[in-house]
Image (cartoon, rainbow, N blue to C red):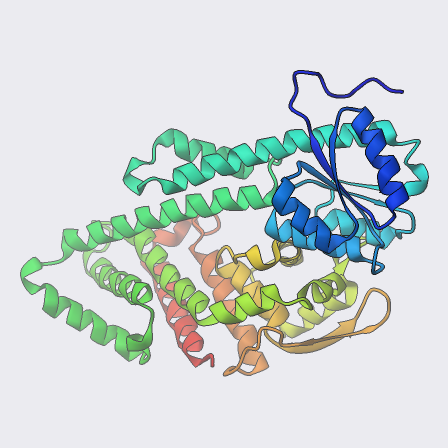
Length: 435
């Protein structure tokens, strides 16, 4: 019998075995316990989810086929949605290459065939130990992120930002943890931008004429956007500040540069309003049990890219437009939705545009097994024609792309701000048409 892989001073690693074969569970449990692992069991996915809540295991090992032929894959989906840092290992007697690839794409750290379990037992122990180390590392990072987010923005220290940036850029952390770090940094950045915009407004706003100036600004906005009064409160404030500073920038020229804050405010208004208008649709779509199957057909499990026929549909749908995205961008969004399910949040205008492009219209293509795949506008978008939906996606994506100072360093030029302004107003008008 191999020596225990865990030193006596190391806390016991708790492993959950999920398999409908009791004899196999018993044998596997004895083997793991002899190696000093603590073991809990479940006979199917439903029981496993309850055990995860009550026992809080450090590693999950699941069979593929139990009550259904892909119950193990469905369990991985549910676990990744509810407890995304819990490491999963899949062991199966009948899994195909495609199912193994899908398990890995869903987040399984290892896929082992039951017929090779004796040969790979030492490798399995190594995987469990490595998974436990990763689990502890991710749990600590999540705790640190939560502590930083609980602070008032003014109390956040430079070292807090450095830690968030370190987590975000390090591949040793789970995607869900890095997403949390990104959201924390983005929230801090938005607060800073809002304060900077408010300071800019205060800097040039004649206080004795404030009401008159703001009324004039709102008249300008209403001419551009008749639905202005129906916007969300934050959208209205951001758009009002953007328009005021834009008008001031036109007068002041380059003597004072508000361009970064103007660009942020126009983009924030467009993004905030689109997300507010689409919130219920996005929640319903991301929680739907049919969504994973649709995404599975859009991805090619062998080439780790997009399904060829789906790729061709996206290409033809653009009708000559040069959308500022790559097919790799689309693949990444689909994979994040697949991994995070109902926890997924579009992280900007580009991700929102990609979701609308993929799920906000009706189309069909040939699946990777040769079957006909029909995408019947699962987001339930109404109020825009299919061609208008594509245009809307193009504008949302382009707005984020155009504002990026690393792509367009000439953003401070007033002509570039005019482009952002015009695009933001068009996006807001199209958002108001959504039913």
